Image (tube, rainbow, N blue to C red):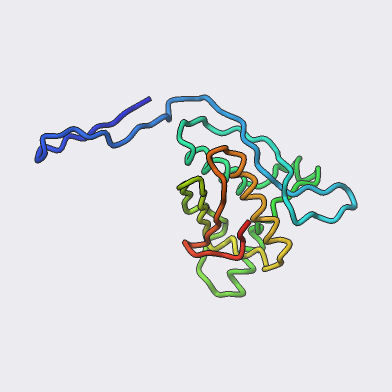
Length: 173
């Protein structure tokens, strides 16, 4: 653990400004929720099939939840895709098509712009690239249920809100 302090000479005061846990190599397992369908089955709109990922341990729930959502954004592994797992989030090709169709200057991948946890409510704010999913209600439900299930595994989170560029979206769980 590394703790930083700053001295404010005008107030003759020392203030703690940051605590870093970067030196720890400890990891924890978290569940990332994807959709799953077997051979010949239609993909479900509800994505409630967990796969395990390892993330760096932290006593700060916001850091843990952020790491879990970033693992979700990486999507299923090649092996998991072969086994029928999918995330519903737009592919790079779909994002490129969305950019072309809308003429908007956006990036090539979805980013988590921020995550807050207040009064047991997690608010996840994503970049506009998430809108490239195409508007299907089933796909919207798949994306929102994956995000919600991934966050709701943490006991301190009781509800989830999804924003895109700080704006409410129809992708609400």
